Length: 148
Image (cartoon, rainbow, N blue to C red):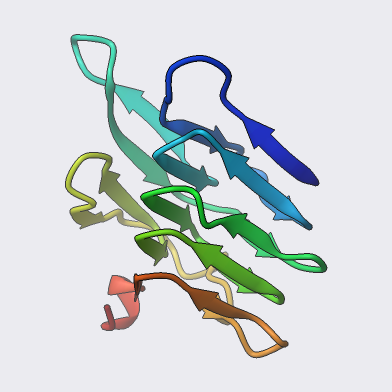
């Protein structure tokens, strides 16, 4: 993803889901209170709303010109691994949840999903290469590894 994405009309939550991975280089979001970047598969409830997201594989990579979500209330990165090589600017909060998980969309509650360690990434969240997260509050979780 490159450049800003803008919601026209009334504000709306914005979810980008690609199980093969997401790369952000200078992406940003305008007129949306909550942005979710996920490598998981969204599941809907009976009313058609987003219920939870099952994450089994994939990496969200932030590089180059980074990610600007400073106009959002919440930015969620839900992936098997997160590779933060550039700055992430969030509004009120940034939540990074890495691993093979089922994540409740409304509460961000985490349920571990079973799986083999054969395809396990070597690092869950890496922000060592000039990356960083800047927001009112930021949280990182990798429950399978025992932190977060």
